Image 1: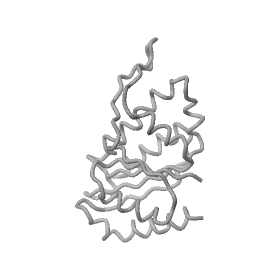
Image 2 (image 1 turned 60 degrees about the horizontal axis):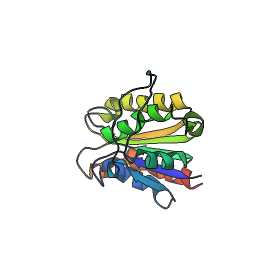
Image 3 (image 1 turned 30 degrees about the vertical axis):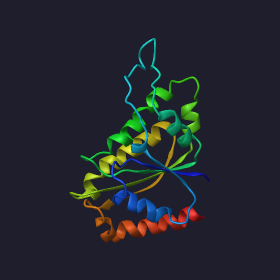
Length: 179
């Protein structure tokens, strides 16, 4: 099984990334940091005769990696009670590729396994649930299997090391993913 992690944070070595590293210790995987790529927003042209216009950016290389893997771990801190703009833009671009004749997007995505790692403050176990639901709706729409998620309680760098429940869950994921 080929594993891809998609990092949506604009800060390297943050709390969400720390959890991801705990989960993936000793496991072969590919990692994409969305902030390392030039990805532009698109104009929504899905209901027009001309359709979407091509965009000159790095998105297709990111999409190719995504499509080439079986299990995807989405990693994003909670920013203003939602996923980061990097992560949201990654998903927004799916609208374009669902209508691109070069791709059979929904069939290529259907059946992929998805995991979500997120962290935040201000009672994230409650305030982060709409984000988890959003991921769930996205995965349902394209036929991905939402395997599991973790919400960590941390704001400042390093605070996640005090969230023993999140760390225990990452240890469990590590054991599961090694099988």
